Image (cartoon, rainbow, N blue to C red; front, side, top):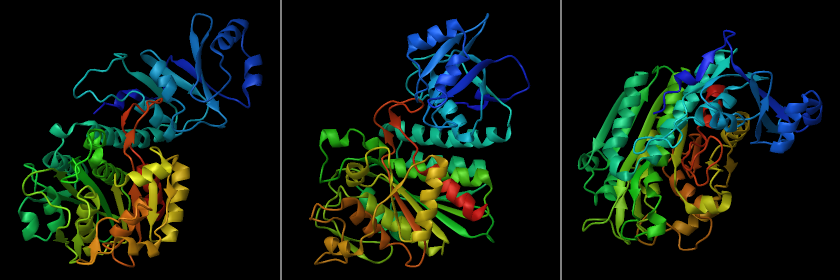
Length: 459
């Protein structure tokens, strides 16, 4: 992972290049205060304070950088990303207000996934000097969380199987002083995780349930659950080559759950944490689950397999059941679950489902506060009729073709304790188009909204 520690430093008044933040509303007034040479540079760059635009301004033996705020008064999470990506190595100081979110953009613009390839840009560290040093630790924690999601999701399946997911959990447990455990392979049957075993049994890489526990036993319990399908062929309902191309990212829910768990522990919130990750390959072999099979779940409900490519909800059924057995005050689950959510909301906007209106409202408010967008979709209960089975308690899919994201969420709801507040995040975990601070590849979503909500509840 990128070492972010050298990219932010306490401002002790040393020499540094100035970065000015210029909004569209104040642009004309700012322009009149510039010298003739600077105005010429501004005109040549067609800079007008628009978002994601910047211009180098010459001075008397030095230079400055002006960064556009767009319509924002004080900037947003990615305001400084454009600057950080374009600047040479050196020390910088922002003229104007800063937030931890803005520092996050500065840091993530300098993050590189370099496990297999050196960065194209060999520029050395761009260090931002910070007067309010209280922002530094928060920004570093957020950046490390985003970088961990990116690095885990970007790693190809060859290097990121169920064992590597388990090791990532154990590494975080060691860092935060938590306890990690795993149930692996055939032991899943002995210990009551038949769905995780069924989905992963066709792979030579053994499936597993991985848990992490942290916190004071006297505090309320929050369960965080993640889908960790380390590669999804679709099973016997085989995906096309195009559909399979990005399936290394199907463990993105697990990466998000783990990143949020680390953020919670680093924030020392007054809660007890139980992380549950179900991780497996959805592979093809002679013992793969078949369409039409009926498999039991940890809860005891039986599920007819209408489509082997709807495996995420299957492994989550066992994981959510385990989480619910601990009587949590709150359950959050993360999954790259349905294409239907992406059709409805696109790649940037995770779908939020919740059985609790208060929790949903808190999450939506926190999402706006944290600049980490969410959009709520309905748990429309009449749609439960769409995944009924004539030979089992449930089918894992509907044959209607309608409301795919809601139907998947309704399926998961059957495995959450009835009166337990629960939120489900159906997210893409991927940025398909490079933008400032956000290269094409793995992307962290919803975790800062969740952290802000948990801080409100358990600070």
